[in-house]
Image (cartoon, rainbow over all chains, first blue to last red; front, side, top):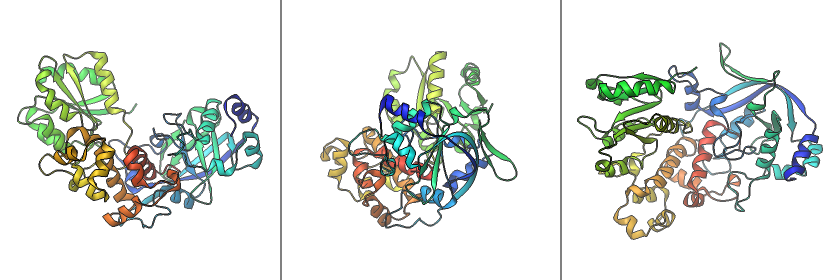
Length: 195
Length: 247
């Protein structure tokens, strides 16, 4: 992955795509119940922004960002990430709830495209490297990219999930333009909407 | 705007000055009569209140007892109002209280700016995916604090390994396994158990299997290895999984 001004120049040169459709998020059942808390409901979009500890394309204490997955299976595998590959089964009583996020974005980078890899000087393998903890202590290339893209006003990034067959999308809500929005509805009422 | 809710347990005169300050930082304030304080404390949780502001010199109970009572069922942030003149007298109590997460204090008479900062800090902590109830089998029956020997046993570690992670001699940890100074680290391990039981394995053997399985998300490290070096990474990993943050 390029660095510094070269990376910024590459991001500027990347083709942008529009994204419209339904994406998914899988949360623990206990988290989902809090969306319906009558006293202090947790909001399914703004309440689940990027964690303070960072995320794949969000540096620690970086910009607000919301991560969703392309399909139900990918969202569930992402939700079960801590136990994938370990010789354990989900404990009894565990529930996961998948909810839909309707997305309308106009300015997104698709990081699955080989042409985009070439422009950014990266590869699918580099984009899938561990970010949460690195033995070399270096800042992950994906977080550098996310930081530059968010600073340049990009609305979101599509990337290949490391847990499921589908893609994931990170949205930078601060960059949403007038025609872009995200919405969570349960069919009866809108639970949350951005902006 | 969503109004946050604060439970104010103070004398009427102090309440009269504190309530407007809380309202100025977007709190709706509940001020129960003194005789109802016990009932309110028993029912105070994050669903009902975003903050509990309470006089350190409560009648019939201590700050430590209040925190013990609250933390059995709730992780609601608590701010103690401490008499500035008698601050020194409470030093020992305060040391114990502030070793606990989501506990803060403000000195009276109140400085408006300091009050605002402290209230904001107490309530701005990241939401936890799953409640923060205690894991009783990791805690001392006597003090109620986390006990290093019980924690080491749960994780399948020797006390020597855990002491090394704590930066203390094994003799010191053995002598006072529930020392206040080590609670902050042990609380991260307790949180790992709480989330791990929900997401990984409800039983101890399954949990230990998971602890000792290397993960690509941790650059090939085992959760157990990382817990001894950077426990917050593992805790955050589990929190993220509960909240569904893609890896």
